Image 1 (cartoon, rainbow, N blue to C red):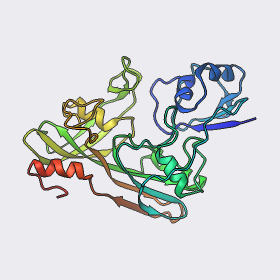
Image 2 (image 1 turned 180 degrees about the vertical axis):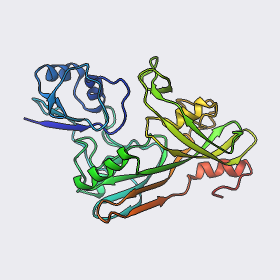
Image 3 (image 1 turned 135 degrees about the horizontal axis):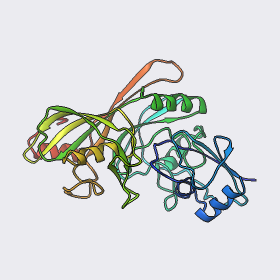
Image 4 (image 1 turned 30 degrees about the vertical axis):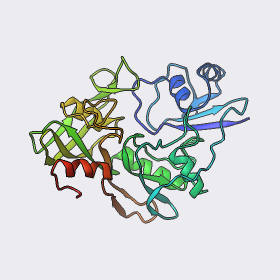
Length: 304
């Protein structure tokens, strides 16, 4: 009997189990509900119900009758590998690249490219997410770490949970930010009018904290560094919109769309404790050329 294991690797806000599995497997919602009713889907080794709200690090096991999953095929996709050893791969992900397969896109993801380069990836996060410890948005570029084995994966996941894995971003936002630095402490939850969006709200929300510092100011925009103290979905994009300085070129939360290059947000810094050496390692990467061009056109100096 085929099995799927899914581990929830992000904070989900008020998301029912059946809805979450529909979006993260190729099984239909009605079939998922049937499996739940037959007690063939467990969460943390316990039977559950459709209305169960998934939580980060939940381990979901699915027994199903027929092979309906699309084979995930290796594909040669150009990847910028910053570092690699027997336990981890650090990748500078380009914009427009989805991290893992999902319904509608099985062939052109980071995972497809990883499978082409590496046969040994962790399976902690299940069939669709081999090696994937954490994600960044399709239209966000920058650093993320991939696990080659389950021991490394669990070690890195604990650091994400304990907030000892550090991630910093560079963003260009609309408007001139007055304060040189600040802390945005505002809870984030799902937008009830559009479940693809998040928003600052007190309803079914979780703590979200972003530190920011101004790097350069331009006539109608600002270059900022953002330091994540929590890891909520779309956190920087939602928080910068909340203080009326949305990320430029952000089609979901922004107001200033210049072109089709993608949102001006880049994960430039990543630091974690290595799972084998137990020593802290850190990685930095340059901002993309389209962000450099914008800065140069504005007379800025950062990264030029």
